[in-house]
Image (tube, rainbow, N blue to C red):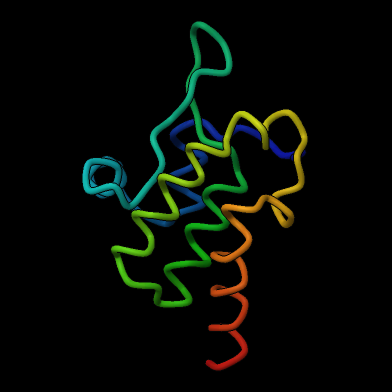
Length: 105
């Protein structure tokens, strides 16, 4: 999946939250952990931020978001190598739930 890796400040801007809220979300399992694309840098794939923002906007319950976070982290290697997120078997149900929620609301 093509996209960009956002460093901390870009991630905070995209999420619209403070640094303390961001790290609290990670500790609660409501946000993915950063990964290290290089030895000196860490960040988050932009699509993870977008999917989690959409899940929150769709008012998915925290427990569902925690499962989504685990699935995103598990799928990250394949997605970074170019696998389309829309067809990833473990993420597709979440994407459908987010889309369906948007249609109802």
